[in-house]
Amino acid sequence: MPTKSDDPDSPLSGATPDNGQRRQPLVVSPEEAGQKLLQFLVRRLEGAVPGSALLKAIRTGQVRVDGGRKQPFFRLAAGQMVRVPPFQGTEGQTNSGQPVSGQPTSGKKPDTGPAAARQRPDPLPLSILYEDAGLVAVAKPAGLCAHAGTRHPDSVADRLKALYAGAPFLPVLAHRLDKDTSGILLAAKSYTELRRLGDLFATGGVSKTYLAWVDGVWPGRDTELLEDSLERLDLAAGEVAGRQKIVRADSASPGQGAGQGAGQGAGKLARCEVTALVRKRAATLMQVRLLTGRTHQIRVQLSLRGHPVISDAVYGRKVRGVGMLLHALCLRLPERALFLAPSWSGPFTLPEALLLRLRESLCA
Image (cartoon, rainbow, N blue to C red):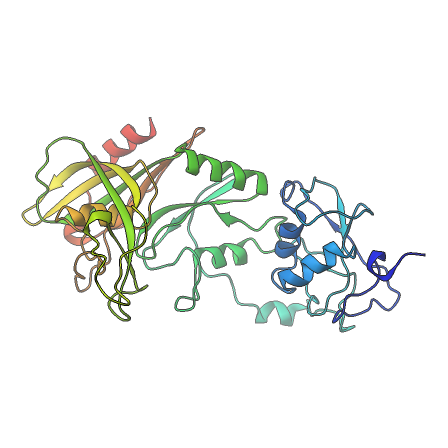
């Protein structure tokens, strides 16, 4: 006779018994294959059950994979069946559309009629630049965060979840852009693709080209390599949004006092190639190819040379009525290149001939 901890049908403390009803197992889809067991359950239950409770359920044998016990970091294969106990608070559907525990623990069926459909808000708009079986490329507007935070509840990640509700694997962003940066943002539609994109970004397998209007006239005439060692500087409350700033490592004074001390360590190497494309009386359009991926890298490296991105309130000066003029123009993957022209207007509108030339050179 199994002990309580070995019985897969014994409910956890604080969980709701299944009242004799057979629970529907979760079937691992091809898009979810490769995930660790704990990671799979966190995503499927969509935060309804704390990670600590899931970890306890796995370790005490109340979660079974194809009828057997597995470790939390066991990697799942497509088609495997994962049985979970009927946790409280998991009355809704999983992102595959199947109930977590067969029947809602409250005993009430979810309202799926026409009235309920009318009450559900439509997903907020999100412009899709490209999509295939593995990934989706989003045209991120300036002002929209990649991920939500306490001060910014709306995000690309949340809009993707709403747009792809019911998909076997909700798209996950493979990288990020700053809130006020526009341009191409990639999300993976399967766990295998997420790992592939992550490896590509980590090893320099994705070529990333940006455009930026900067203050002043850039002096260089040829393509230049910019190299800096950067680290974080903590700032006093209210000085800048986020209370952190990236600075050149050798410019951070260690004696700045509490709340304004330099980050620890020698900093991280930041490298990019820049080319001046258009010069005006008080502004220059720069093409920037990132060779590393540091926080705020382009904004910091240009600002350190006296040419901050126009309307960058952290590293330069905010221009009234003008958003920050930094745009992720092209991402080149091993199999394809993605190109998105910026939507800048007024004096910052780009000539069509220039955009055509950039597309041809970057996407060839």
